[in-house]
Length: 96
Image (tube, helix red, strand yellow):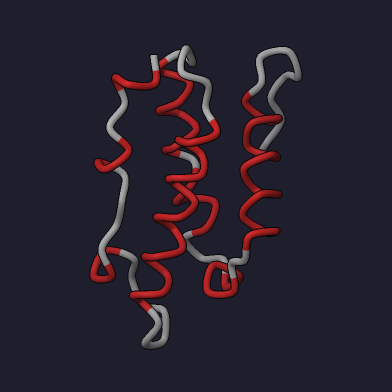
């Protein structure tokens, strides 16, 4: 029930991302791209709690990752695919 999750509650402003050596706007833009990609990839009938858990894992994964500033479409796609694999109940969860 994807429609019950408001992706906008997860989106971040530059002042919320911390210090990124003057690149806070880019960091916020890229983290928001990740949130939207996860949300967009989710099936419409996904369990709300599962989608929320997935979205909540985005920032802790990227918070201190310098590659956030270099995020391109390939990196974004690879992250989203890995995230969905990790949270797939058929796959089993390991540390993400």
